[in-house]
Amino acid sequence: MPSYYSRVIRLIAVFGIFISALAALAACGNSSDKATEEINESGVEASSQPDDEQIIEEATSESEEGEESESGDTEEQVDSESLEESEEGEEETPTEQPAQRIQFTTGDIGEVIEGRILQSDPSPVYVLGASAQQLMQMTLTSLEGDVSFDVGAPNGEKLVTGITQTKVLLPVDGDYLIYINSLSGDASYSLDVLITSVVEYVPVEFQDGTSSATISGGMLRGETGPVYGLVAAAGQRMEITITSLEENASFDVLTPSGEYLISEIMGQEFEFSAILPENGEYLITTNALRGNVSFDLNISVRD
Image 1 (cartoon, rainbow, N blue to C red):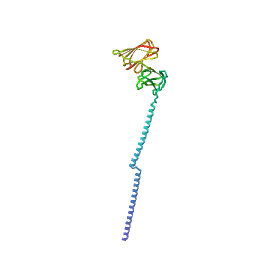
Image 2: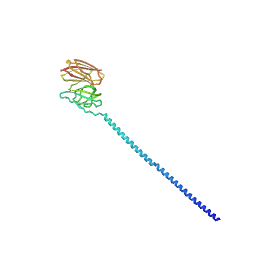
Image 3: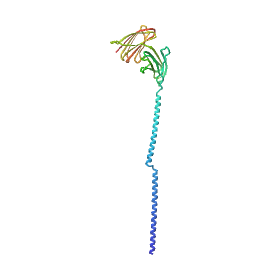
Image 4: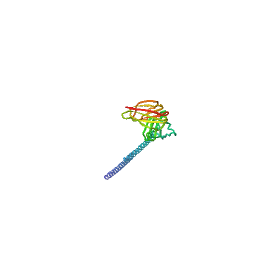
């Protein structure tokens, strides 16, 4: 009996060891599966999230693409603005008109030029060749709009500006430029230009201690008489007395800027008095209307 019980006890012990071994193996299997699942889950999570280098590369790539896009937009905008400015500049700069040369008919000393100017257009320019000490007489009229003219000497000096009629004693030989200006809107105009032969120029000078001078002169029929020049200052008073027995002469007094103080004085005797508007040389021109002319010219200038 004792040996029987001993065998039963050993069998139970062996069976217990076997069960323990199976339990241990099962536990190991579960741990391995769980570890595998954790590893797999970790791998999935790792693969689902980009690494830092990938993020940096993508951000850098996006930044570069954005900069290129912005740069491209900026360049296109600059090019567009430059093109617009260029087009505006071209629109604002009118095409310059070529100068037109004035040619007198053979044997004639004058010409009448008809034209039209738009306010947005550049000034029409006329060229007239002339000689020193010729007298240029010009009158500009317009039935539509306001106009004026400027006259430039061959050396570029402006002889007169912004007026509509004048007489100018030309200083040098060469081409003189006449500019027509529109003052208010579109305008049609008529420019009457006359050039005399070379005239005698007589400077008027007062003797020391005096403020007046008397000059006697004359001219033949159809001639332009002497031109007298007197230097005076703004604010001074000029007084002129002209006596002509023939009563067929005319006289003009012009300011240094070419404007008329008096125009075409006629009669046996004429007196003129005025406060001078500017500094410079005042011109007194003489003309014979009919036949020969003789005259006496008395000029005085006082402060």
